[in-house]
Length: 115
Image (tube, rainbow, N blue to C red; front, top):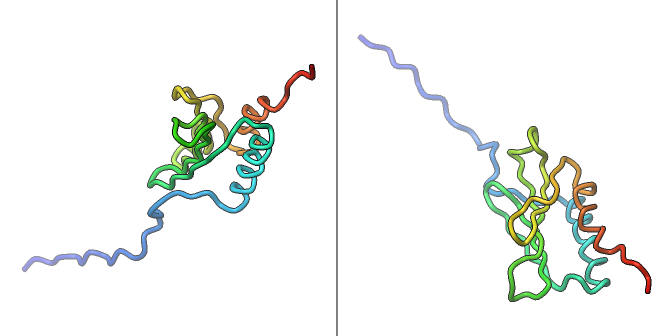
């Protein structure tokens, strides 16, 4: 007679269906977006919540490719950093663990000489 061990019941999954930004992250993102709109640099944004990443894309016009993509990838938390700013050509401009410090690369666009 053979004895089979029962397979354990798999409870609720700990892996979420999609990655999203929390309230504090959205506050930081929308604050930067508001300043850039006031400066005339950006005009539109879009958000995508995927299985592996949450993406905040900013556009100069709504009909073109995004100027920048701010991505949140939880799988890279221990390696390169949770957040990344990616340019229009796909180049990673900055990567890190803190959203505010990663977004500083975009805030430099607000600093201009006075004529």
